Amino acid sequence: MKSLLFLLAVGCASVTPHPVPEDARWLTYAGGDGPGRGKHIVLIAADQEYRSEQALPMLAKMLALRHGFHCTVLFSVNREGLVDPTLKIRYDDKTIVHDIPGLEHLQRADLMIVFSRLITLPDAQIRHVIDYVDSGKPMIAIRTANHGFLGNFPYTLAGKKVDFGNDVLGGAFRSHHGNWSQDSTRGVLVETQRSHPILLGVDDIWGPTDVYRTYPEDGSLPADCTALVYGQPLVGRNHDDAPNPEKIALPVAWTKTWTGSLGKAARVFHVTMGSARDYQSAGLRRLTSNAVYWCLGLEDQIDGARSVDLVGPYAPLDSGFDYAQLGVVPRLPAAYR
Image (cartoon, rainbow, N blue to C red; front, side, top):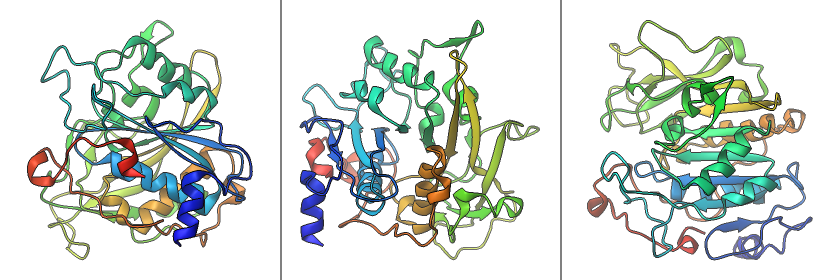
């Protein structure tokens, strides 16, 4: 196992060259000879609550070593270049501007996986995100990405300002349907979608985060979205806790198609589960891995038995904003390799 990790880290296991140069500001994982050979995924970790800085490198390692995809992980960093989930947002500091080095590599990405929360980027950086959203290339958005950008998202379509969550993803955070930091979520597969390729081999999805409501109580998931998994709130934060009889299940994973100003249709997968601890669930890892294949038009390559095992140790911190108690401190990107 140590030799495999070494090969992954230095890129020696690559069959085709990784398209992004190694740099201390981001992480690169070279894919090998697997179904994802030659495809490049850019993963963006930029939230302050759910430890995306731990979850996305874990996913990148798994997708590279187990499935063959080239992966590049970008982070929100502070002025010292440290990955810093403790940075404030515009609600708390009107002057804040976040920094995600390497967003220009979206130009060479086949898939963007974004896990951001209320970040405000400078014009040059947000332009890379908007160009990607307009490109017709696929997207996966995790949990807080449906309210991932605050303020500076200058994108319009047919004269209307585009909202990344509601318009591109099919829903945005409206409230905690579950009890925030008090209960957990059991994923329930939609019976009529059991044959969908993203659900192939998926079983036992559970995570300690709560269910989001992404549409009004008198509404529903938009008609252009296909729900694959519902989230049932449980009465506690343990895997075997009972369903909360006072809370109905709501969609937590769905697909849709997004068409931007260039008229190019893009496959979109959104999952509102996805904290770093949620991703200790093999079921959630398989759901996300399958979604990668589907987004890239490789659904015929999905194998419900292909490994989604973790690569190396994975002991993510708990979610929340009490950074001192949780042990969340700014770190170099290399600390998350």
